[in-house]
Image 1 (cartoon, one colour):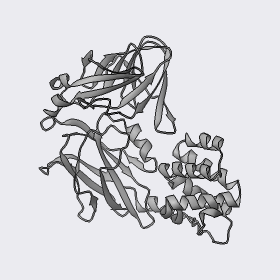
Image 2 (cartoon, rainbow, N blue to C red; image 1 turned 120 degrees about the vertical axis):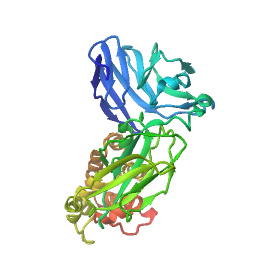
Image 3 (cartoon, helix red, strand yellow; image 1 turned 60 degrees about the vertical axis):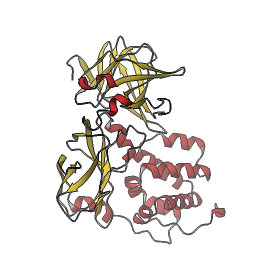
Length: 384
């Protein structure tokens, strides 16, 4: 990092869709966000709020393609005079003519020529703030697709374990300038495995994931690497493991079976993984619905996924189990707080509300619902 830059970690705000970041610049200077790698050149004190938007590729009219996330940036005090957007080119000087920045406002889109392209960032002046994002010239960039790789990253997310001891590790291949924080928020029910992730990958080429253990099942057999800048960051590969495996060496291989990334991943011991599962309550069918929720409260909070929670909130609102104010207060929270507030809120509303929640939960995640001891009886829609 440039010694003149000050690194900061912004406040992360959970929104109904995605997250946003907020920070107050204490003075003039260069400030680098530790979560997004954005660098702000600031003239005076002010507050900045920024978030990733979804690219409208139709607006690019087929001549440009995204080369990074599109960030909406707001600073009421107009403190920011220059913006540094992270790129993922290992040799930017060779492709400098292919890179530019789009500036999108209510009046439309303009293309900005960079002031300079450094080894890591594209630098542009910002007379006004709105949405900024790096784009590639499609024709010029196409000539380099097969010969010039991109700086990329291999991200690992361990899903919650099954009672049988089965584990699924999700492996995601992404350009290096996709912020980890943006990926984590879509995998909140998983544990991120922090390993050296950097590698070089060619756009449009197929890669495969290999293990040093033949018994491990990996899906799919191969997958292409592409410029994924959201909004979804799904698993590129999945590898089935067991908690009896102390470690596994994984390799990402190119079409010539050469390793472009390799790492030995250490798994937790069997007792650590299964201890929470062994303590799950056995809930009698004779207890009331609200008592079932009380007994299953801890494993529900620990294991229910972020997407399932959002669907449950929508459905419980439509069934009038929760009201608009309760929905709005809960939807913006992180996964664990959202789960805690939801189960406590509904449980205190009595048997009927609790029974509807169990039924909604069962319809969206029947496996976990049964795993933690909740099993809804068969109920017709007209009963609630």
